[in-house]
Image (cartoon, rainbow, N blue to C red):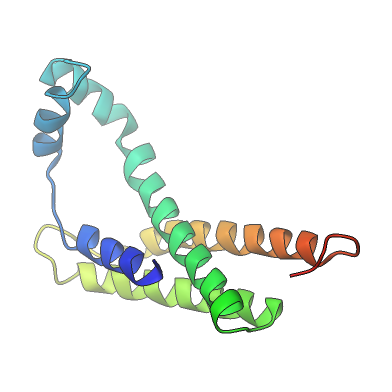
Length: 141
């Protein structure tokens, strides 16, 4: 699953969908809004969807990496968290660098920081989950 998600991240980073294409596509959806109405909505809220996806994709990548390291490779909780954070961060940096070679895209340091939001959330969730599972009386992991 980790490998599949990493491919999804790379593919979406290699794709350019202009706002005009997106508006036309979305206006044909089940809501049946006009292009003008959707364009007005998109101009106000694009950042929530686009930047939110950055957080989501790196949250999932880091979460899957942490689970893989802990459950499949048998690393300790601490090592799993550290290596998941390093791996998620390295992937975020390399993904933004990769986008500098994609026509119509550009790698942004601000996007790396947004990606790191997802990394931090995943590491925090895993730490809380594993702490709870490893606490006395929880059955341990």
